[in-house]
Image (cartoon, rainbow, N blue to C red):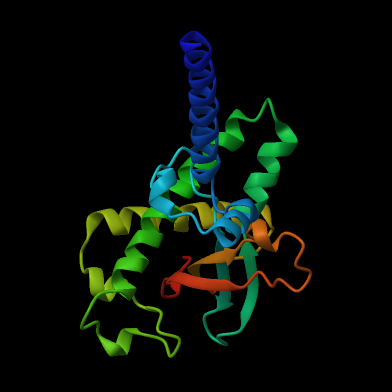
Length: 216
């Protein structure tokens, strides 16, 4: 009799153990409808399933856009606006697996974009920022005035400016009498819960904006 009871208890222990760790695994997945549905129905405390575990990288909430905006120095007329990060991504996919050149370009450009984005974020969140350097939208239009002679900032800005000249040449844009500024934006992405939302709008938020810089 005792042997039978021991076997039953062992079997139940295995089932409970497997059930608990299965739920714990599911609870550690990025947020989506399954988690919310369970929480609403059974009201189980999050601590019970170790919700602080991060087995997976959280899903991206936005992607970045890099714009080169060119205008005439004399008339201040905006002639061209070119976005490049999306095109770089497409070129990587089209030329795979022989896309070594595109991978290098992607790495170099995005590296500078990330650093300038961090600079923009730090400036936009800096207390006591010079109000003369801030747009009505609250974004910095003259970040160089706030970061001073930061060599790292200048290096990343110059790198993107030089890449911009290559982009303009590829687009057959005449740079005589022109100036250009660099704008980095974040474009909102759909979350898992909004995949079927036909009314979702991919709004863009400016996170970095340089002054206009002469091209010659």
